[in-house]
Image (cartoon, rainbow, N blue to C red; front, top):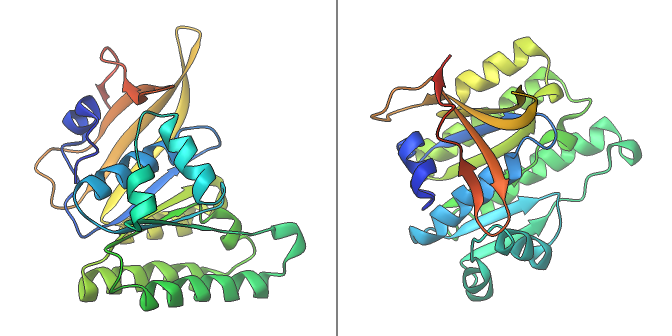
Length: 230
């Protein structure tokens, strides 16, 4: 899979599909922006895509993506991109209600697997609050099963703080692709970084750190002077 962002694609080397891709990082680290680039790439590749977003409905998302220089309006109008708004309020819902929503999400993937080749979830964080380890491991296990059985691809963003460290290690191991975002101070300037921790089946080696900024009208702009090995 290409994002059609030339510099980003050169650094990543592409993501083999189908795939379960985990994108993690703190607030404002660029998780949604990176996800939008992947969604754009899926649409360009002719893959019908369903984006489930806590950031808003279809009109809001399409406008946000346009502000990054990515045109998804035609795909949205033609039904090749469907946006479903995730309405999760942890302060107003019990853990049992969130558990039911997580199961409903899996059921939705099952029902729509003939229509879509890709599901993108942005983000899973609010749904996971208060759930036990079995719920979360079971969720990612089902994604892997649907990837293997139905050839579906999943892109999931999470906040790094949303899981205990030992559980996060196990979830990372279940993902085919694992991308970790962070914010670092470089020469007194706060910059976003993307660490490529795993891309199963990729030809390029992993471990590189890509430093970038988000530029209006362009999206992710890779800064060429800061790619280093970790």
